Length: 257
Image 1 (cartoon, one colour):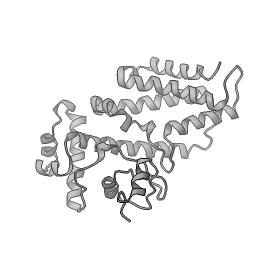
Image 2 (image 1 turned 30 degrees about the vertical axis):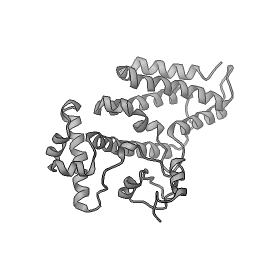
Image 3 (image 1 turned 180 degrees about the vertical axis):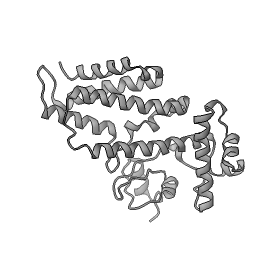
């Protein structure tokens, strides 16, 4: 079966419902989909920036691509984004510039690979943390929301520290909360909204409030709306403990009428 070669597959990909029995990471890049750690589940469409000019198939070419990605990350962490150029990446990686352009259209394509690698790690870690949480409904709602705000802000900070301009320009593609949770076709935003609704049902509080699903919807629109705006407009706010506390308190207040 050749993925992407039939009308049915093209329509499935366009609608975000392509089922892939097994794909290697290399094949995934070629067909423009994400690898899901649970074979047979829905596969998330990949950001366009991850599309490579040529997919490395031989061990030597894969090593070259890995070296370019690693060199890019080292430059961003050690020297800063201002000095990042395609030639500097190729020089540090020990790869000739022609080989770089054989696989990537520009340096942004390599930066995207660095971000994607970090997102895969963060997504897996978040999934395992949630999976190993014996009772996700244990504890107070206020404390759980406060902890969630802190984790989201920390994730944004780490991405902004790598390359602030790139992350803000391509925020929708590399924001962890918009990614599907491994093995599921829901984003983390949807998963957490469902979790909060179940918390409200199991642990009702006094005071006037909307029904559980609507309350959770409203609280997370407030939470994510403020944090998204901070990333795009005032990133320094994310480092401020007082700002994080205000976001948490505002989200909690939105649960009650």
